[in-house]
Every structure is written in structure tokens, then in C-alpha cells.
Image (cartoon, rainbow, N blue to C red; front, side, top):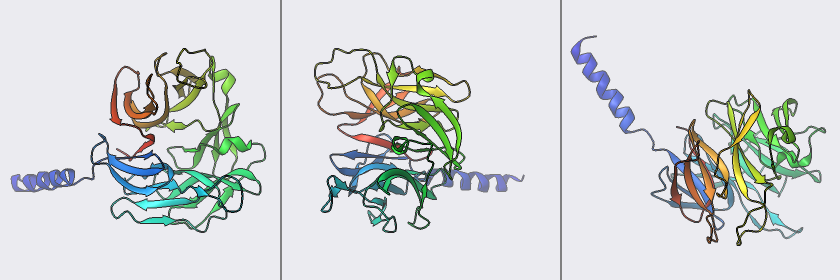
Length: 298
């Protein structure tokens, strides 16, 4: 390669890197949806709602609206997508239910999976990101509780979910590909219907919320101690990530060795978002008094 060609190539490469979009996070704070840079700076409110997840490319945030229902007990919830740059919110109106929540992006950003109340039971819903192509994913062998916290596999062709007894990997038609019994995975811990799963960038490890079985001495906490475990899919072994005195939950992978989570320290009344290393030894406060963190792809 001639010298001038090399210089031009390096200039173009440097320009591309310098103009690459900074990595973004999304989170919820007191019924509002925010985005920020990955270090927690440049916070921006973009919508009212709950359960946000930012798209892999960082340009959109999916979430569910939440308003009092006029026709039944409980909230009215619809799936919506907010454009990060403009703040424009689009409610996906072709989903035939007024009780949907917790949308999660497919790895390529083309689809959303979410929990939906339909036919008087909870199901898994799938829809294209533009609101087209809605369908239910059904399997009579899965409990309704299994659809409370879906997580896409890295191949975009299957989804992880869980109920009170098992973790499943299912295809997009609802067929069970793999099943792991929680009683064989967890020691002195359990999961509830809303506990989160997050798959590592290499697709080998699931981070999972758990409720510890051991008694704790925290006076301002009602219920079991929350913790995070990592489950190696190949070896089918799980180990605790967070410390024995830490109250940590809601994990979301950042890289193969760190993740976002929320933590509530003793004498605090609200949780905050932290960045934590996989060994649990390093943690950094990113956003105070916030929850449900997610991050765009590296």
C-alpha cells in the first residue's frame, strides 16, 4: 500500500471512530423514562412509563405506558417506542390488549418480545419494532408465570424465560428447546415471577435475580434479600455474584465481565443504578434513585 493511501485509510478510520455514537443506557425513575450516557451523565427524560429497554443501536427505547384503567381493576398498559433523538413516542396500537408490559429488543433491533394478557391469561407476545406482525407465542406446557421476564438469546431465534420452578429456552413458536430445574441450580435461593434474566454478550452465561433463603438482619427491608447469580448454560452451574450483605437485583450485561444492576444500601429508601464487575468486587454508582437499567450494544 502506498504512503498516501495509508494516510487516507487511517484518516477515514479515525473519523469513523470519532463519530461513533456513544453508548447509552435507559432507566426508570418515578414513572418516567430517561436515557443517559453509559457513565450516567447527560440524563434526558424522554417519556412517562415503566420497564424501559434501550435498543441495541441506542436510538430507541421500548417501554410500557401505565395509566389507571377505566374498564377493569389495575393499570392500562400499552407497548410504546420512543425515539431518543427527537423524543417522539409511538404507541404500538395493533396489539390486541390493554395490559402488556416489559418489552425487550431482539439482538438485531427488529422485534420486541413482551408479556401480554390475552384470553384471560398471560402469554408471550412478539411484534415487529414498527408495530406490525403481532402474534402470540403459546405453549400449554408452560405456566403463565413463565412470561413475566423474557430474554432474547443472542441468535435472535429463541427466548429465555422462567416460572417459579424452571428456566426455559423456547423457540419463537413456543417449543421448549431446553429446561433447567431451579431446585437443581440454586442453593438456598428461589425466583419469583418478575425476576430478570440477562444473557452475556457471548451467549454463554445467564445473570439471574434470586431471592435468598437465609434470614437477613436489615431492619428497613420487607421480604427476602435479593441477590444476583450467574448461571453457566453449558455446565448448568450457578454461583452467587453479589456479596452476602448486598441487596442487589435487576442485572443487565454490559460486557463479558461487567453488568448494570440496582442496589439499595442500608438506611436508603430507594435503589440506585450501579456498574458492577462480574466478580462483585468493583462497583460504581451511575444514577441515584433509579431502576430497570438497560444498555445499548458495545
